[in-house]
Image (cartoon, rainbow, N blue to C red; front, side, top):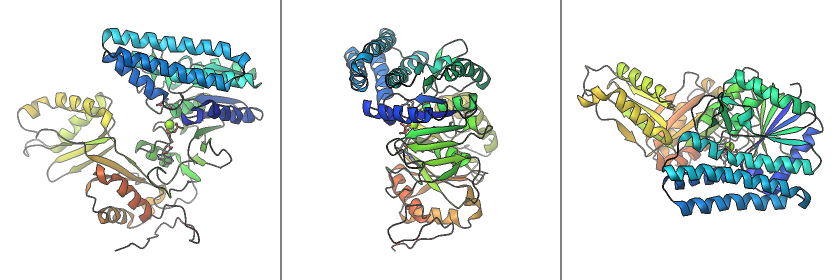
Length: 487
Ligand code: ADP
Ligand code: ASP
Ligand code: MG
C-alpha cells in the first residue's frame, strides 16, 4: 500500500500509561501525514509473568497462579485508569476483565491437567499483546484518532510449530490485506497485536520470544509498506549492547545482512527473523528510540555504499556447545555430521555455529540453551546404534560457554582483522574454544568460556575502535585502526 508506515512499539515503549501515551502521540503525529498500522508488544514484563503463571499451573501451584492473575489484572487496571479519561474507561476495564478471565480459564485448565501443552501456552501468552492493543486503541480514540484493536490471529497465518511458528506468507498477505486495508481506507488506525498468529485452521500460535518485531515485518511485507519503524528503548542498532559496553556507538546505517547476523547472534534489539520477510521487497527498517524520538536512529537498508571493517560485536550467554567424536577411524566424521545435522533439522533445532577437526574427525556445534534438551534427544535417537556400540564417544556438552560474534560487511577487505580480534581476546587471558567464519565473511563467531564473555566483548569492541570518540579524539571508524594497549 502506497506510503503506508508500519510502526512497532516494544515492551518498554508501551510499559506504562505514560509510555503508551508517547506511543499514541508518535503514531497520531504520523497518521496526519500518511496511513499507519501500529504493532504493539505486551507491556514490559507481562509475557514473563504469563509464562511463569503457566508454569505455576503445570506445577499445581494454585496460590502462585492466582497471585499472578491478580498482578496481571492490577497492572492493566491501574494503567487503564491513568491512561484514559473517566468516560472512556468503562468498556476498556470490562475488556481487560474479559481477557484476564480468558487467561485464567486457560491456566486453570493447565492446573487441572498438570500440564502446559504448547498450543494452550501460545493461546495464553498472546493475551499480553491483546491487552496492550485494547488499551492503546482506546487511548487513540479518546484523543480523537480513530483506531481499532486487531488480534493478529486474524491476520498472520502460520505453521503449527507452537512457540516458534513461521508465517505462511501467501495466506497471511491475503488475510491481512482483506482485514486491514478497508480499515485504513476508512481512516481507522489498526492497532495490531505483535507476537501472535494462528494456523490456517485457527489454532493460536506465537512467533518466539521477542517476536513482535517479526510480526511487524510480516505485516509490512504483506501490506507492501513504504517503511517499518521499530520503536525501542535505545537509540538504534549499536556497535555493542550498551548494557555491556558503555561507550557503544549508534550505527547510522546497517545492511539487512548485518542486522540479521547481529540479531541471530544475540543482539536483542531485533528479533532474528525480522529481516527475512523484507529482503525481497527491500522495505527499509528504522530502529528508533521512543524515549528520544527526535534522534535519527538506525536505518536498515539492502546495501551501504562503502562498508568499513568490523562494525559491531554481539554476544549471547544462552548457548551450549555439543561435541561429537568417533571413537575410531572406521566411522567417518562426515557421515556422523550428516546424520547429526539431519536429526537436528528434523527436530527444528537451529545450529548457531559449527566447527570441525579433520584430523580427529570430530565436530562441535553451538545451539541455544533452550534447545539443548531437544538437540540431545534428537542426536541420541538418530545415533543410538553408534553410541550403544561405542563407535561414537559419549556426546559431550559444555554449558559453560558463550558466543561472541563480530559483524561487518567490510571485514573481508580488512587484512589481519581476525588475528587482531583473537589476540585481543587472548590478551585478556580468555581461552578461545571454537571459531567459525561464515562463507559470507560477514561474521566471525567465537566461542569462549562464559565467565570471560563480557570481557571478551569489551576487548574486541576496543580493539576494533568501535566506540564513541572521546572528547578531543578524532572520529573513527578506520578499518585498519589499531589502538595502543597497556602492556
Ligand atoms: P523491545 O522491548 O523494544 O523489543 P528489546 O529489549 O527486545 O526491546 O531490545 C532492546 C535492547 O536490546 C536494548 O535495551 C539493548 O540493551 C539490547 N541490545 C543488545 N544488543 C544491542 C545492540 N547491538 N544495539 C542496541 N541494543 C542492543
Ligand atoms: N511480548 C513478547 C515477548 O516478550 C513479544 C515481544 O515483546 O516482542 O517476548
Ligand atoms: Mg524486542
